[in-house]
Amino acid sequence: MTLAQWRQRLREQLAGGESPALDADVLLCHVLARPRSFLLAWPEYEPTAAECERLNALAARRLDGEPVSYLTGEREFWSLALEVSPATLIPRPDTEIIIEAALARLPARPATLVDLGTGTGAIALALKSERPADTVLAVEYNPDAAALARRNSARLELAIEVHQGSWFEPLAEQCFDMILSNPPYIDAADPHLQSGDVRFEPASALVAKQQGMADLHYLVVQSRDHLEPGGWLLLEHGWQQGALVRNDFTALGYQEVETLRDYGGQERITLAQWPGRLNAENEHQ
Image 1 (cartoon, rainbow, N blue to C red):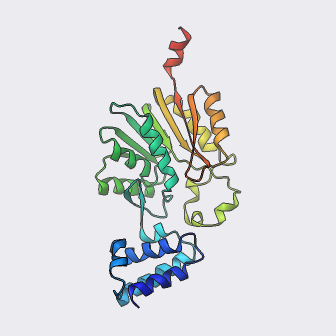
Image 2: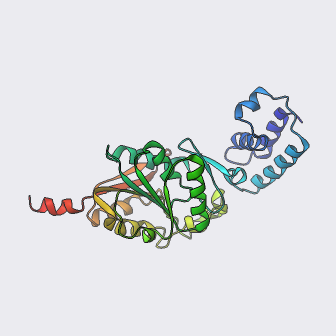
Image 3: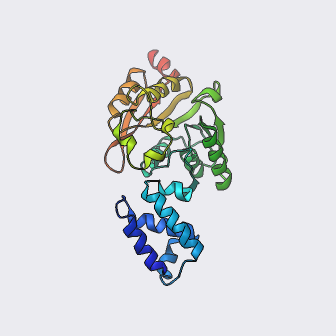
């Protein structure tokens, strides 16, 4: 078959998925090691027998529901080509909102940031790419995911410090101008865990106790001891959790509490500023 025929066949095979045309093109580009423009410029190209065998194998795995990013081992985030694996969540476009929010609130001077539960390193690396003078740290509990984040850092030549451990544990008493996290926030009973790409993603990076709120609450509480006065905490959460996170922030003395919506219009990122010693100063004014 020609490349044009393969392209049509894959689209028909994957028609039951969310994006069959895109999935077909991504798999073709991956197997052929060619850019997408090649698919349009050379429709008469005939894939080799080995390439056809790989395409059939990948199409079968995609039909079983395996995410395309796991099939190709790569996902783009903030224009960065990240290595991904089943040890990590697949970076989503909506998470780029946390990058936009961070860039709008970081000081003009070089700052110190940490991304907790970094996975692929997506958030930390995106911010380092935009602010090379900043000191950017990342923490990841899963050792395989931490190793992957280090590989992404080296491959992209974006120097971040990746620590393996649980939340603030590897950071001792360090304080930061900004803390960011996309933590587990799904209730274990959520039926969506049994459908789509998330079936193949690590449950430890998805599910949290207390109906998905345990890790979010922990981060709001503990970040107070690791934020500089005037520092920011930015958290990604589920679309129904915005009010709960805002309440946590407000009850614990944070200021400038705000929730941002994702590209689908759902509440997705809640952020707030920790006044720290500024509180004491205000009390004497």
